[in-house]
Image (cartoon, rainbow, N blue to C red; front, top):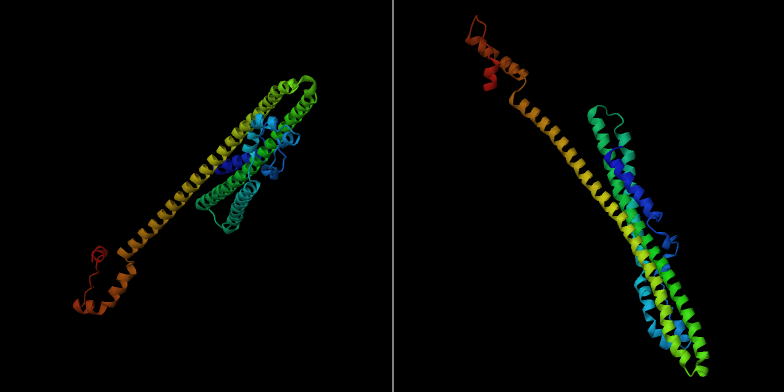
Length: 301
C-alpha cells in the first residue's frame, strides 16, 4: 500500500472511532441523548422555592453552577457539523470521480511514464479523499461532543433533582416538628440540607471529571485527524512538484532538439542550394567537375 493509501486508511479508522464514541468512557456511556437537550433551560432548584424553602435555595445555589456551564446552542453545533460533513463528502466525491476517470483515459498508455502517471494520479486521489475524510471526522467530533455534553447535562440535572428531593423531605419534617421543638428542628435541618447538597456536589464533580477525561480522549483523535490532514497536503505538494519537474525536463529536451535543428539544417537544404547554382558553377569550371562545398564549411556559414 502506498503512503497515501495508508494515510487514507488511518483517517478512516480515526473517523470511525469518533463516530462510534470510542472516546467516551463508561461514566457517560451511550451518549444517545438528543443534541436538542444541550440548550434545555432548566432550574432544578425552583422546586425548593415552590415548596416554601427559599432560604435553603440560596445556600445550595452552587449546585446549579455546573449545569449552567454545560448549556450550549444545539442549532449552532448542528449547523456547523452539517456544513463540515457536507463539504467533506463533496471533496471525497471529487476524489472518486478523479480516480475513476484516470483508468479509461490512460488505458492505451504503456511504458514507465504511463505507470508513473497512474501511480501519481492514484496518490493524488487518495490525498484528496483524505482531505474530505478529515472534514467528515471533524464534523462527527463536533456532533459527538455536543451529545456527550448534553448527556452530562442531563445526568447533572438528575443529581441536582435528587438532592433537592431529599432536602425538601428533610425540611418538611423539620417544619412539622418546629412547634414541638420551638424551631430547633429547623435550625438542625439547615446544615443537614447543606451537607446533602455538598454530597451531591461531589457526585456532580465526578461527572464533570469524566466529561473532561472524555474531552481529552476526543482531543487526541482530533489531533490525529489534523496531523493526517497536514500529511496529506504535504504529500500532494510533493506530488505536484515532482509532476512539474518531470514536465520541465520534457519541455527542455524538446527545446534542445528544436534549437539543434535550427542551427544545423538538414543536408537537403544544402543539396537544393547546390542544384540551384549548378549552371553558374559549370560555366565557371568548363570540362571539369565543379568543387563541392564541404559540409563543415556550409555549417560554419
